[in-house]
Length: 104
Image (cartoon, rainbow, N blue to C red; front, side):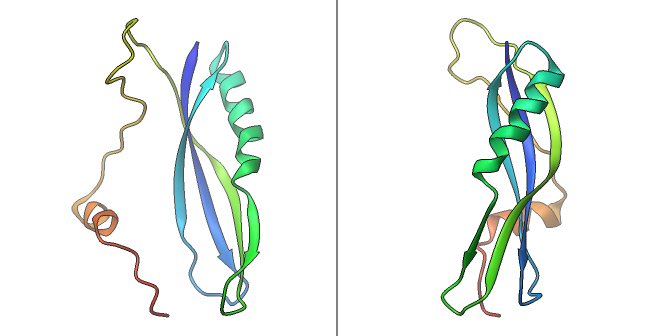
């Protein structure tokens, strides 16, 4: 069976500058919700990283947790299969639609 698993990641800056959040949705093949969650948590290691920015700040991305595990129920023709959907407030939607400006 196939599952969509939404991971929530967060960045931390050594400079104490505010970090960002990222929602990553993975397609995971598993036999149960629990197995899909465990596989996604292991796969999340590829997103956990630490690096130094051009201005010398250290940034660490870490998994904060699994937000949602959903069984994907689809027909043989997979085109148009919805993997993830998120309801947003007006403020959240406008925030996503505006580009991130790095002026700090």
